[in-house]
Image 1 (cartoon, each protein chain N blue to C red):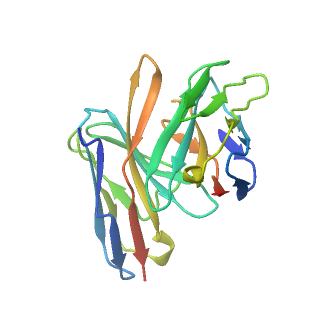
Image 2 (tube, one colour):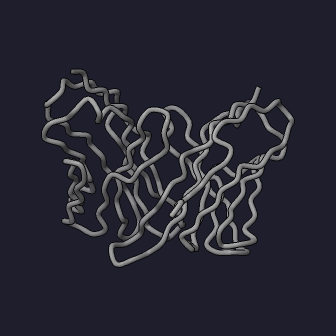
Length: 112
Length: 114
């Protein structure tokens, strides 16, 4: 079945550091890939998405490229801010079973 | 445009009580779903619906019921609450467009069963 694997957390960075959060997947068919962010005490917000191989999703300085050859969708940001502290979820959708499959999420803490 | 609205946001139940989590969307989306979020487990699908009158089970359906009498509403019923159902619940709706599938989440319902 479909699955999403995220790197183990939590991650703590200093402000302005470079961020990479790894995400790999297994899926039947051709999934759409997503990153969601959850700020403390809030719901899930779509951060970015990519629907086909080599697509790059970007938003708020975050980027992720759909790599079919390595089945990956790593999230990157060049310079993190304290306000980026949140839980980040990688997810995929194939439509075959009508559900989003989520990774376990990773908590990012950015210190001033 | 309200998007996906969930109520209540917080609820404490006693074991054995029943309750309904409400979910409504005003975007005319056909697809709606319920997830639960537990620490270290990501989000898991409880039930989903691909249109009014059609529902199906997800990964963790036991102890929950759903119905979809209208396109807008997709309530989740806990039949007899158990401490294992303490969780954060998210309702979602989605549509397909030229950029693929866009999925919108509600703000979540924090449920504690004591």
